[in-house]
Structure formats: structure tokens, C-alpha cells
Length: 284
Ligand code: PAF
Image (cartoon, rainbow, N blue to C red; front, side, top):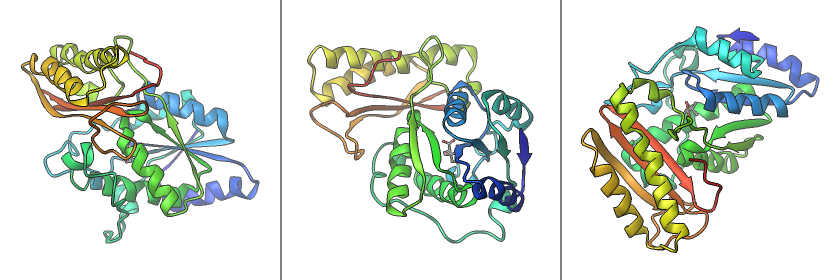
């Protein structure tokens, strides 16, 4: 596996493959790789001739009071994990190469953002879309792999790709969980032992919600209240949002298949998200 830091070098390297009509799979990440990322890399490597993994903690997707400064940066370890999972290239650009001279052009998807993380983290998806668009232009992938844990991100990236005619297929990948149900996230490593124990309430409440819905409950508000009651029983937990939305990320009153139960909470200082798409196999 090759580690490349410069955009120009990556382009020269990839051009050799593009000339030979080789397919390129792309897994964008911010590093601190975990089994969820490994799944994306393995899938890309099975479906493409070469797989590029980007590792870049993107400053423009973090809000002022968020964890940009403390976000884990573990490049050496990440390279080992990426190589083991089948990556051919790790692309880890420096900030001054990605934002040479400062940028004033941004990509913003106008709808799909007025709820969930779009509402709670203003400017976040503009930062995500801009960096992903830049990576698409640099890597020119045939397929790009995104986890369903960030379901709003996945939905917005798909819309951006369609709207701007990026010639790339977006591949949604299932949420990967720890054995006890906690969804994999780079931020899980912030959790103390007691916070880690409390974090299980996310998957537990999702499971209870699915049980209620399977039992015939269709009132969104009733399911939301049940989840909030479960969360409120934990002192160190602060609810950011508990919502049930349709594919357009709009709140629904009556639940139907394909709707999404979306959760975001702070456990101590750590913000965790999770979700379940109603009708999809339960994996917790
Ligand atoms: O999901 C992430 O890790 C990031 O939002 C992404 C897609 C790598 C863009 O920085």
C-alpha cells in the first residue's frame, strides 16, 4: 500500500490506472479507523481494481465549539488498518494543500438539511459536501462508499452527486456495531468506562422502538416519547434530537416502512448518533 500526501502526486499515480481503464473505489474518512471503516474498505477492494482511502480531518465541517482540535489523529495506525483491509492507497493531504490560499467556493445542498444534524450543526453539511466534492474531483472514483450510520450525510451526498452529475456511484453500507450493539464510531474512543456502559441505551432504545412498531404502533410521537423516557433515565445523557423522518429527512406523524428513527445524544461531552431504517433487518 502506498501513502500519498500531495494532490499532484495522487493525480499522477491514479492517471496510470485510469489510462488502463482500471476501476477506482473510494472510501473517504477522517481517520481513527474502526471496523466500520474496514467494512467499507473491504467492500471497495472486492468491487474495484484499486481502492483509495482518504484520511483528512476536515476543518470546515466542524462547528466552533465542536471537537476539531481533539479529534483523534492516528495516521500510522490507520495506515496499518487500511492496508490490512485491502486499501491500495491512503491519501492523507495536508490542510494547506486542500485549502491552498483559502477557499471561497462551497457546495451546499439546499434541502434535506432543515432537520437532524443539519439543524443541530449549522454549516456541517456544507463542509462535508465541499470536501467530498473536492475529493471526487481529485480521486475520480467509479464508486464511493458511505456508511448508513451517517444517514443524513449519505442522503445529502447522493443528492449532491445527482444534482452536479458527478460520475460516481454512491454505495450505501450497513451500520457496523460492537457485539453489544453500540454503533462503531471514531468518537467512541472518547467514552470513559461508565459512559461506554451508558452508550448502550442508543441501540437498546432503537430495539424497543422497533419492537413497538412491529407490534403495530404507528404514532411517531408515542415512539419518540418512549425513546426520550429511556434517555432521560440516564443522568449523564443529554438529548440532542430524537426524530422519525422520511427519506426527505422530514418529520412524520405516522410511521411507515422506509422511515428512519434517528437519534443524537451527548454522553458526557461525546456526541453519538445512531439510526434504524424501518423495515430493514434489525442488527442490534
Ligand atoms: O463521514 C465522515 O467521516 C466525513 O464526514 C467525510 C465523509 C469523510 C467527509 O469529511
